[in-house]
Image 1 (cartoon, one colour):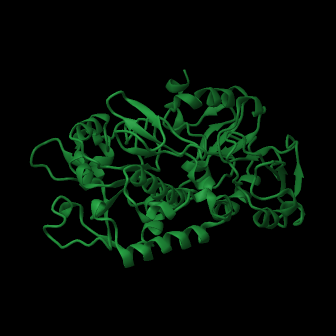
Image 2: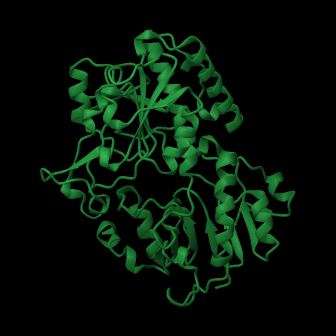
Image 3: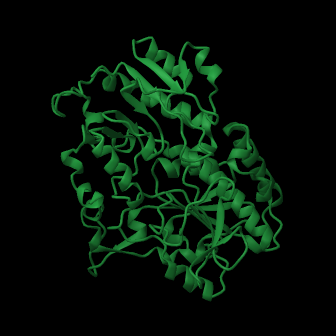
Length: 436
């Protein structure tokens, strides 16, 4: 199979999705290496037809001549074609029920599926991701939600000056706005009703670092998790500062066997040996940012029971949970649904186990937009494309008519091949039970 033609499909899962896996400049650089890029026309993509065509890249409605198709989000069943090589975030490796029909269709059509999420180095570190931009946009969105929640509580606050990420022309403008709020807090202080204001970050990877990049534009003092409960006793606090707590695995769980200390590798290998202890922090957090990777085997960070217990005590904390990871009823069990740009938050009502529109009601506000990088479409696409560009020649020159071992895919890409010519590859055969 000659894979020198690479198609970039339009994104059609969400009307708000405006990103592109290859930006015009990177498409041109590949074209100059003899790899023809054909971009499918799109009314929503942040990069216009003219931006691609100006650099000599073809934009067409039909990209069926391309044996390799690049996308970002899942591809509708009707759009899948026989014997194609698809590269996108498939959201299938956890056996996600909602994507099993798509995976089955890929198998039935003898396609090959390469998932960006599984493109890793030899140590398992992800090489292609949007995570930092999810964190950047998610923090902006969460601060916006905090402003609205406090206003509903009748508390005048500077966070009402922050808009949603998609309402700024670019990331620089959003950062300027957050910085201005920081200056206001530094000079006038926060209302006494919410001081000291504490924001917790669960996780310390790309997503968390992106969120902290925005948060650190405010006047911040970091507090160790162990000192959170005694904040104000162990150290003086100020309404001209916001307090930040970053939680690692050893802060969020404990060994089930009394007296056994935390061991990170054991936790990864045997999470069932551990239980969650995060509920002890919740009464001390105004805002929680969830930026951890989670699977069913791991303890939950926040349970519905935790929130029900806090609400019964009539505590205002936590006011807002920015669930950037957005696993439905996952690490944050009260994330009962994901949200879109036009309706980004809801209140979780623990008494009736339901989501209430907006920021009003008893229970925390949940921000659960699951395509956060699309709120910063131009910057996040450019970041992603610059990384992806270097992997495209390895895909374009591979021999997909050979078996997987002999197809000459680079090892980083080969690790991400979930389906090869209609068959689940050895590392992903466990998905057979989920498909069935």
